Length: 341
Image (cartoon, rainbow, N blue to C red; front, side, top):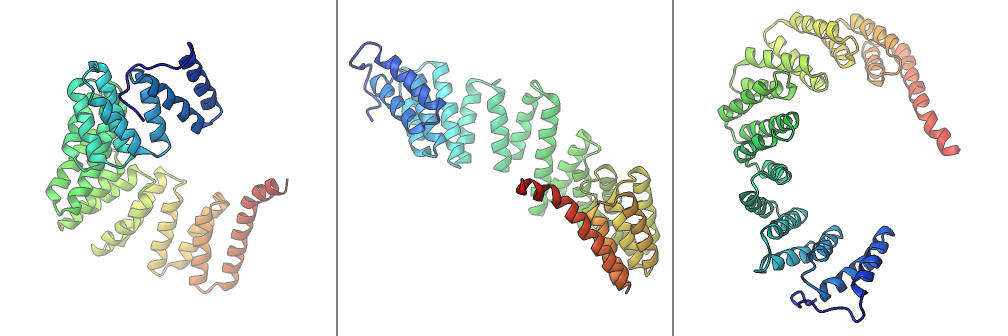
């Protein structure tokens, strides 16, 4: 394609306008090959038509032909006749090409060039923050978060917490526990109810041999975040057992269940703790009561069947698993009826 041919024209007056209309009609009909053909004709006729130029490059990128999109935008940036805004637009599109092609470092460098010209371009700041996080350039990403607060403070703080959590985990992987702890402390200053931060803090303290602090952090994480609590219950249980205070775990779970009566994961953890201390009867009773309250909860029914089987109550476990199958059948029924219809 002759990218540098200047301002030639179609044979007849109005041909270029008709080309735009035909390209638009093809786009509405998802006829992208036809759209590409018409855009190429427009660009060949006039390389100063930057709308067509960018549209064609975006189409290449959309179709996965990132190499052609890159070449178009790189060639465009070589031109000396571009205005300041036109150059910035071309740089942004080039950065998007790099992103689409998986060239994250080059995309980030190009976005940095854009910010040098437009430091308040928050859309570019958002993209750059995401890239820097992926590249593990956490300090630079965090320094840019301040600019996002002007647009949406809540979103900016959420992103900052995400980056700090990722940074702390990266520091742990590198063996830098002090750096990890600093990142987590900063995270908790932003959000004291951040369950993942408390969980990571527990891991850091456990690695440093500060078991009491680790236990406190894990308990706090389970209290503030029910979603991550199931993964923490075994650690909390083991910590109390190591301190020879198994009753402490029971008391902790009682507090959780008082605050969250429908926390079935805590109920299952309590039953398992009871069973591990040779109190299978109490474990089964705990689960049976929970099943009465939440008859469609699969996890409770599975655990009840498991505990009955482990205690040698084969007939009762068989009935429990039969009831479980009935629940599964009820859940599958609407899907089956829909298929038949």
